[in-house]
Length: 228
Length: 228
DNA sequence: ATTGACGCACTTGTATGTCAGTGATACAAT
DNA sequence: ATTGTATCACTGACATACAAGTGCGTCAAT
Image 1 (cartoon, each protein chain N blue to C red):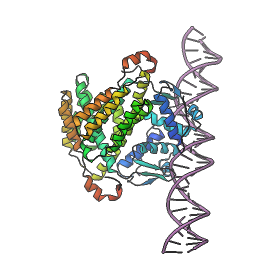
Image 2 (cartoon, rainbow over the protein chains, first blue to last red; image 1 turned 90 degrees about the vertical axis):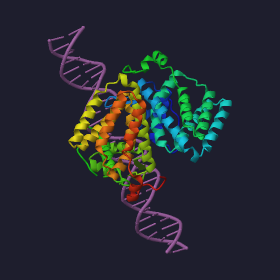
Image 3 (cartoon, each protein chain N blue to C red; image 1 turned 120 degrees about the vertical axis):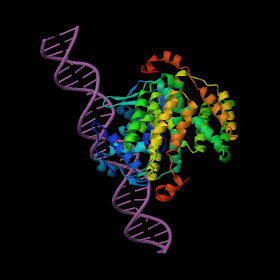
Image 4 (cartoon, chains in turn brown, blue, purple, orange; image 1 turned 90 degrees about the horizontal axis):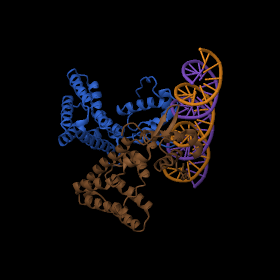
């Protein structure tokens, strides 16, 4: 498990959650790994209380399983959960984009304009980690503009399921297409063109698709056997 | 605050959550009410730990505000949150129904068939609380059939915001129309008629609309002043 | 070799203790 | 009257202590 420093004024719970989330997404905590509140406590230098609260939160989205009196573990990858997180993202993102189209005349797109300009810059200057951050910011900004940040958080809470698949696939998305997508989406929304924007979002998100079958064949032990 | 018995084998945390949720929805815990882990502990006969965990969960959806070192309180009604919970439900329910239409040939509708029959029965025999339960079951069943139960839980977690508005409006929905809606929706889904089903769902959910302006005027002190 | 009782080491669930931050209040200084 | 300040009661954040359930290994009985 990969542990970094706690931020200033970060609560113990947030810190625990941040560490767990990162390590689950990167697979440093592999699917199926047994955890224990005690182990994690000493590993992170906290007491059981904030660890426990973080685990409870992660168990809400079924990325962690808490087995009473037996232990906790990183859930095996459940393809139906991966599907569901992708479904949730696609459905919500389309709805938000369409809403943004309707509200376009009243919205301030300056943050988004600046964002895509920076994306273009970091694309040309090859800073993929910065680019990924801007990618996330870009999408979240639409939720913010349409006053649907809570919806964003719910969607985000399920994203770990898909993130793990991405980590396994070592997918190197064609970043140049990503930035182009973003620019096109922003243009369509500004123009209030619902159908176009919605279609572009669907196309954009489809770029993140991974070859589930292949991955599943290669990492059988990371997957649940129940359902597909 | 209205307190009932703890179920057998119900964990302290689930019990606390159940009591809090019910009392928030019914407004027995009015918007703006200050809580404290200590008070709730003695009121429910539990220690602070499970209370705290329940409050943390409720704070995730912003129905409870935890103010560090100051106290917790039932959030005032925030119209933007009410909007968002309604938005979330409409968007997701439409997507689920459309998905169900696509999957219709492979689905087993027997549970839904039995459900609507019972609804008709309880409608004629005037048992509104039974009817409400069946109403919830009806909608959840579509999530279950399409393998999207996690999505249902996320949507449900936001529903308290809208539930409080309904409690304030003392809305007596025309139950006969509700049951008719359900029957029509089920028919459309079985026929795989996406557009029809989607439209019916939208119409159905619109029946639960409340007169926000009027309620807000009558219960000013229950509402936040920030944004509308 | 098989089976079943039992203890032990470990887990999470719950209870309680400790601490630092907050804001209301009383009161002194002006 | 106003303002600065010290105090104090209370809070949630976090740490620790205790309880109770689980399952595995041991080992005796057969």
